[in-house]
Image (cartoon, rainbow, N blue to C red):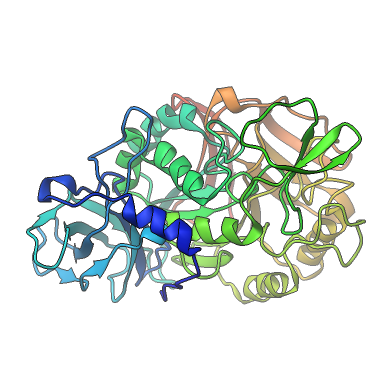
Length: 468
């Protein structure tokens, strides 16, 4: 992966760099843990962040530190014959992190890695705890695969990761709203956004989960800018009576004011790529053997304005991503084609919403045209999955002769749930519940795919199996 050095205002960078005090060896840690992501059968990316504390402070923050790091990787837990990356400096303009691209890995193999770190090239080095991840099987091999899908989480969802750890998945797809900038502890600017991830992913159980589980991270509105944010909004409209000392109002419309004290479109894109192991493209597809191919879509960067009248030119995906999606679906020979979107395509969703493909006053026409395209091109064995919604559901679209399933994994915590909305005509819903938890997807070598919902405590709630 090529790291892109983007411009950071000199005043911000100066404040970040010069707030760091001189280092002693004992002052440097990998307190946020490490994460492996974007895993294929041969490659992966490891994200490392150097810190001033071994874990969260009382405020939940894990302050960053300058320093250097490198990664040792081996297929042996004893680290026999390890491969070692070059030393690299952390980037204060990326929350004191480094991303290490790993290549020439072995398919379907657990790879162990350790971070070695030091304050300067002349300082003594220390080594962090062992981490690991599993690589995907070769595209032509059928092998068992198990993964999790999550969304809509804040710190109240930490305990949900306990039963997730016990299931020992091969990887996790975090399908958007990984944190809430406009939720607990408002994150209005880039440094505050970094802190939101320290508070969520620095939790002990989160660090334990990702110590041995690779991740694919997707963003939605709340970990991009604010609720229902699009690239064209100057800010967030709020009720005029609302008192918010962090707000900066520039316009008034009726009983609402425009609060522009939020991340810009460009900052939202850049920040997300800094805090997770991430390639340049945030829409991508990955094969986990012959059995499973997964598409992960980008729903914020290329979308038309939410307020635009719906029609054939209104798009969430943009022309380039949509063409890529169709081309790669047609080219796939996987037993099961799983499309994961940050937002629902089938739903049903709440009637008041206008932000996604399942909304009549949103991007309805693009969603329906894509579902018709799947049917007309006989693209079979497609399963849709989504984040964003605060209830679990399994729906089946029966409109226009279609037969396409969709699963919403629901929020990670019960405290984040919302009521299940009414049904749409032509959509069956075998299961729905205002429950927090997660979705587990398992592929077996008999070519069966199981989608199973779990509650926060790991109680199994509903399952459905598919065969190609």
